[in-house]
Length: 252
Ligand code: OAD
Ligand code: ZN
Image (cartoon, rainbow, N blue to C red):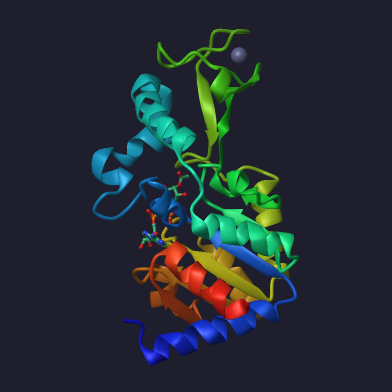
């Protein structure tokens, strides 16, 4: 049962969202959990099954086949995944002109599949790959690659291809990184959905928003580092879909 205190929090969050002048939403893997996409951390997380080396640049350079095996498995999951209520509600808020942009750490394309248009992919994308040869750097669409023999190689120069995901030891891609920080500086209300807040510099986006005077609303079944360190002003505990439904009802 939802407690009285919780109901008030939802009303308060809905009121703040409605009155926002520049609403920005910052999402992590948790928003896609209800779409069947595993999160990274936690009991059923990807880092329980794989060592995080598979997404570490130096490991990738030495063991591209191992890294690609793990990535291909993830790619197959996200190709077949569908947006859930939370993705759809955010796309609706954009159409209504309430939400201005989404900054996502996710590479699953589910915001775009739900119809969101102004999406900044802070950790890059799995939709494209780039040849690692600095003199070539040819780009391909991942879905057009033959992934039967891993790692896939460049047709132009024969070097290994790497997905355009931001790996550990890499900087987030530009211009997504700068534009995301611009959004965080502009926003007066930021909703954070489903991130543990442990990966930097992504976790600095809500901190930047708060430093610029934004109200921070967080949706997560568990506390994140952003809750624990007091970046969050209103913590709405629960799964993304369930909580977004309550917010949308309160906003009617
Ligand atoms: P994590 O796996 O670190 O955290 C997922 C968060 O989602 C946790 O705080 C969970 O409590 C929460 N969560 C779980 N189920 C949820 C649900 N149904 N609704 C809402 N929240 C839920 O994922 P991220 O914070 O996104 O980087 O991880 C950050 C980065 O670490 C990722 O972008 C990835 C990874 O290494 C790269 O791949 C570059
Ligand atoms: Zn090449």
